[in-house]
Length: 96
Image (cartoon, rainbow, N blue to C red; front, side, top):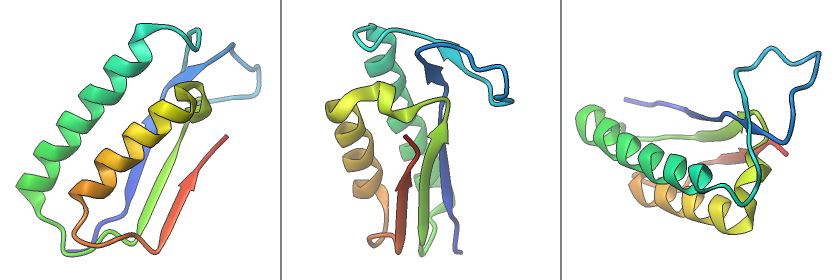
């Protein structure tokens, strides 16, 4: 089975009038960002164990503003996700 992966990071510094995505205003130093990342990785591990995709050609990280996670948070998120994949994706995009 082939599956692409969209990861929604629902955090922003503030709300934009034009945005229709679900997002929560949060500060970059807020502990909720690290907690969200760790929970997301736990959930992803469960889903990968259950569905066992043969390939994941596309990984897209979007939503609010994924860059709110900071360099360390993005590194943790992508490293954790890449460790679950059967092979590196052909495309990896992080919206910023």
